[in-house]
Image (cartoon, rainbow, N blue to C red; front, top):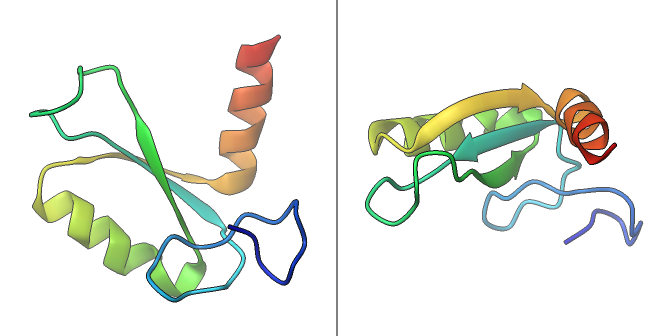
Length: 79
């Protein structure tokens, strides 16, 4: 999903939100995923705290990283 029809702009994962993502919430469900597995949700500034609390209450949240930093890490890991 992308904001404003721009195919390059990641959008927030909050239901119904179309805002550009600024944060990556890395998580896993230990009942389903191996410890090193990371799934991601994207969050705009408005929904970051809500999504963080949702995952945190369930014990799923592993990391919250600025989207730009996450992208830098991904590029570095690719080569």
